[in-house]
Image (cartoon, rainbow, N blue to C red; front, side):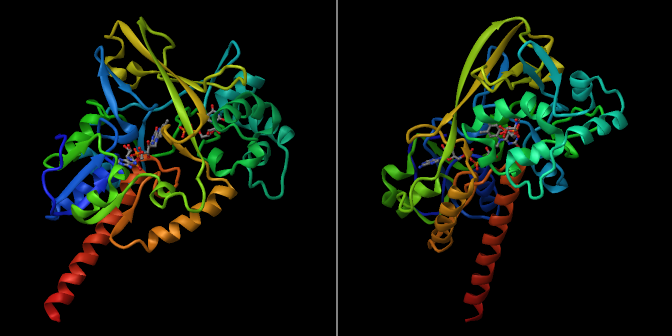
Length: 385
Ligand code: FAD
Ligand code: UDP
């Protein structure tokens, strides 16, 4: 990694060294195009950045578990990293009690004493609150599991995470979580799951092998200069910022992470969610448990308390808030983005989308393929003119 951009004749200037920018850069470089990747942070990887501290790989910007159903994407990431067999099975702590999570037969056993899928279903039928069109988060979850489950596991966490009435949030946020009447505690449904054994940063470093990367560069500090260095731009930052906030500011949630190194084993699991409204943080991560094969060999431990807060300029925008108001505003920006010559917009911030890692990589693979097809068609047209 250098601190200066070497040339001024790139095919692609890629703004953002997160997974979108990195995947796009890899594909275009492999096809013979000259790329430079810049990032305003001091490191590569965007939000998946992890760093070794006292022998423990710390997920600096929150827990990242790779999961996908897509064979091609799984093969793709395995080109750059070896994955362990970590399966995410977080627990919930509500007051003094610990529950199995996501909601499954064990959770309902712990809450209600039911012991079979049939008993659980019977109890759920009694407590469900039917709703004709449950399009908001609260109505949807009440229609699935009723008020007690909602208030124990969902309401407090959601209010802390989004600082909004769950009735004003889209149901899509909560539909990410499975509800099962079996003892399966896997957080995800996907065929493949794991965490790179050498950490995400090493994986991203491998993806960027042989590609020029410059960190500590804010594209907006001198946009016209950076634009002049390349024929095309790939932009993975905030789309509203790119267009000078002309339709207003899109809202985000930001996060604050409090990392602490202590002796021993703090909580016996990688992730514990705190769903009580009076506990100020949403979850505590214990990083050594993301690598189950080595966790017991490490005598100290690093834990991270995760707090959610309203985003303001200058903070890091982590979660787009895809409610009606923001979706309407985003659509206006998306139209401008579509017509911006020579610029490709991609990733969580530029598309204002709640993308997981496999989806961001998938989207970058699709967009780079489309770009290569466009280039080969225009070369063909040139040759046949
Ligand atoms: P980013 O990683 O945000 O990268 C964008 C980059 O652009 C950043 O590095 C930023 O510094 C840079 N940038 C922005 N503006 C500029 C500028 N003006 N100049 C230069 N650089 C700029 N996904 C999963 O699959 N599993 C999980 O378990 C999971 N957990 C998550 C937990 C948390 C707390 C969060 C926030 C996300 C989680 N995700 C998870 C989602 C995952 O982080 C994203 O899908 C992925 O990181 C998005 O990549 P990206 O390239 O779109 O964006
Ligand atoms: N959620 C909850 N209780 C939990 C975990 C999640 O209510 O213990 C809700 C919350 O609204 C959250 C959403 O489910 O925003 C999606 O959870 P997920 O773990 O996918 O969030 P992320 O990992 O993206 O922060």
